[in-house]
Image (tube, rainbow, N blue to C red; front, side):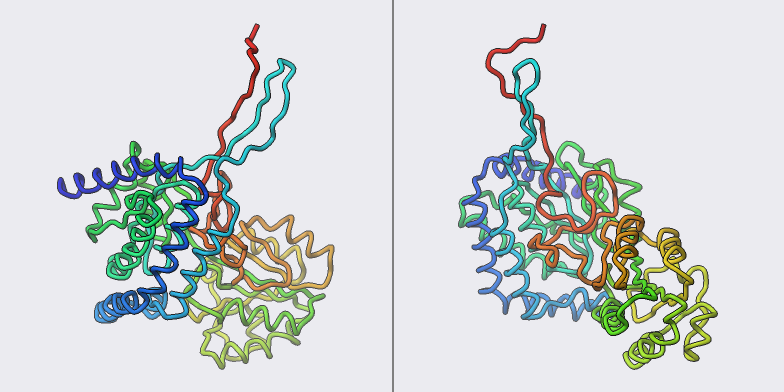
Length: 419
């Protein structure tokens, strides 16, 4: 334990020192590093895939479930996606140093705000090795240093990606220690990271509900988090049913093991008999297990009975809860009762209903006539995301560059004194 303490203290000290240099780095240097990292990832794709195969093979031997293996697996496409995400971040405006809201006060001083880095960001995540590149890129562009602690199941993949990141930083004459991947799989390292207040300014956990709950309870450093993604699609009685089928199919079956996949489908009673048979045939043909309320089960014989717990469950699997509701009020009430405040969508052609849904559903992302699968930083134009926040303070929804910064007040005077 003492060795872990010493190791993590050293990592923290190096991150803090690097953060001071990163806060001063100009936009060209940061963009140069991002381009270099993207190129290094592309040129080393065979090494990344080989490292990832080692992780995937080990994960399968350990009996990791299919959804976790899916999140762990890298492909040529995901490697190209990492590089593209980094280049998109490079193309985004640099938020650091941005001055806003400058106003003269009666005393003659000007008061405004300047956007500044948070400092050192600790990121704890499971399975997805692409998070290593996304997180490094976002922290780098926003002038922060970061300490990345991936899951033991992705240790070789994460280290291979980190090598590319540090190569890109060195080539841009920025400190390689601005991005550090924790090299130990000892869980004690997490306990140290989330309590190192003198070295770490914020923690971003990405992973299962139990991991995030533990970090939220034990952390002494502020946490940006979401516990789970219980996402809904509501098909209104004034929906275009062709759109509704495509959206509800995509929201559930595009990928199962992701936090923005739909877990509960709500259907207005006036159109349930028209849309559910067609939609549920698609689900059943794709191997999705259906669990519904009594009204839904009357329409779909293969549907199992849903329990109260089903409405509160993030499956991350080919399982879907289905409920028939009488109107928009009932749909909104169900969502605000059971949603995890992540992402919820309505399918309707009625503008007034759409606006009510946007106003009244209390989630980080609320959509009209679109799949919940769009709720991520890449699709929102953030280049990439460091995570999703369902908190209401500091950052909410996909956390991109701006979410990794803060603002400080600045005052410009010309010799004024307070009397």
